[in-house]
Image 1: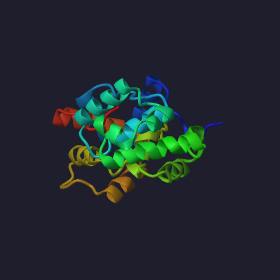
Image 2: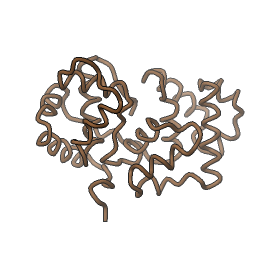
Image 3: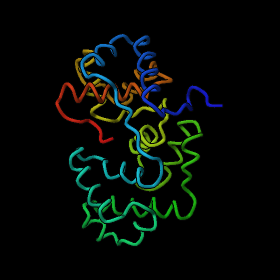
Image 4: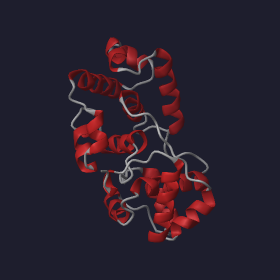
Length: 217
């Protein structure tokens, strides 16, 4: 049986349930929803391709990440076998930086070796799933959290290092400055077990306020 902290978001109805619960916890979420409209599901299929896509999106704009991912998809480099068939230089020709090309090979090798278990990421406590992912070279905490949120659908995961979430929280809650990652993490504890829905609300609010996407999903 799934507990509240291992619940998986599968449908728009799950998002609606989370939004309703969050508004009861923090009424200002209602203001965000009113400003930005329905909160999107934002789901990708779990597995290697989605994890690689999260790595592609690290520390670059949404538009840049989409362009690079389009070239990777067109080249068919979306399976461990296909990625390993490309040299680091060939992956760079597709748009990956030198470090990200190495990371792509590292996660492909982990999949081939069986040291990366996607089923574990679905069922383990969030902290353990993050630890398992970040044990692989190139997967940082942000990437692990984004993967768990959008590809696995974990309901109670958050990404406090995300600058768009920090800025959105500043705007929505009328803060004098962006909360730091530790500060936002503490704030988000009150939104459990729906922190992933809170993140979706904040990203949607960021898009409404800034006129651009804060996350690619």
